Image (cartoon, rainbow, N blue to C red; front, side):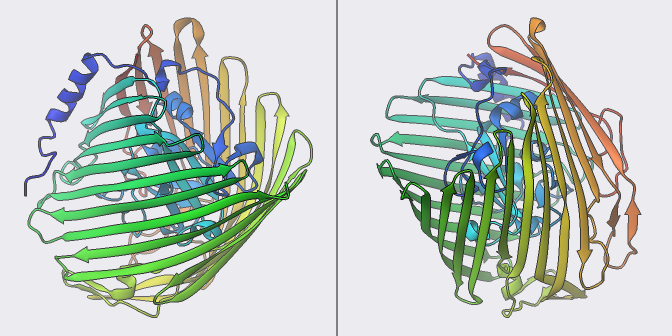
Length: 606
């Protein structure tokens, strides 16, 4: 089969030629513009400013990504408290997200509300999203199955992509770094009053740490078509395609992803909103010798209706259909599962108190019904002090492989059709306080109790799955952000995490007790330049190489990085970034921390 992006060496040359041709129009043209009030929709499926959202949430804006010269979504999320980004070796394992001490499979990752496929350990590899297409990243902390169903045990990450512009624009960037890394991107968009389009092509390649295992080349093509059908209705169509080659493996491994997400919104009057979303996403993993050939797909449809009643109740109800399908020619495995879901939520505004009550019923053909409620309370004590608290339940549906079994080489995994969903109860409480003008502090506590966790036991060559494990995670998050002067902004985030395996009474593996991140951004206005410095601290944690090895305690460590950017004229910016400034290496559980790295490049716009 002839594949579309086989000549990977031509991609950087093509990007360079496109940049030389004269890019135009991008948000980078005003990199120092003031940040507007952050908007979040994912927390309640209704729009709120971040300061007025009733549940624990964070937003990372496009402007913040530009200031940090972020290259991947992994880097974008590293600054978020209570999140751990797991980037290990492996062609589909470069960006798994753990939230509040839970496993990656317990974090639901969406793109514009759409579930996407393709990752290890039943979680999504977030590297498949191009950073240039991101408008903002919405992070909802705590169980959210009351709105989103399966996987939203620890929380939800919803990556919101850019809409089509009203005016023509064209932009591009090209960067190179150590370990043979190349990242290039070209974006173009145009629109009229009623129709618009935006498209981005991103290319990445790297040799990685192990040149016999890590090298890859990746192509990503994303876009948006926008139609303003009337003053009250709009339609957005968001196609996606990516092609990834693990170029050093023998046989060569390829991942191909494609899909489309269609979103329709109509406000028949000032009090009501109707939303429809239909999407399809396909993930294809195959090897050249056809020893592996697996396709995973998601088909979704969602309809929701929101209306303000009696000036105090914003009621939202909806229905969602989800078809999860897995076809494996190499394993002769063809299985699927369907979920039908209904949800209802009431946001009750009794200012200065806001109460949110909601619940969702998921209906599965095999394991039956699963009901998950949530209640949240927000109290604005003063103009500077806001309290929030919430409690809710979450669940993670058993994967198709664990329900049906599979065989890989000599290993035989015995499916267990009697598996029940993994379940949790989660609590969140905290406050926001404006310390002074431009400086804000947030302190929150959380706890998650999880039962019916699915344990994997291996008696070679057999593998078995059972609902036997129970666990607890709890902790404290502290965030401090602000503008120290007109030229200096800073942030500090700290997480204390306490975990327990309830069957053994021991701490959970791979969960650091202390994590800290900090950053400072300094603008040299007379030089049209800025300096951004970040540091990350990871505390001691338990670790075990395999089930046959003893548990050991790994040492804590610090990582520092720095980025210097300089505007050149009115339409370009050059930058250089140094990761791991002090050359830290030999971190056993962080494969990609292996010495100092450099990355430099240019961004252009008009």
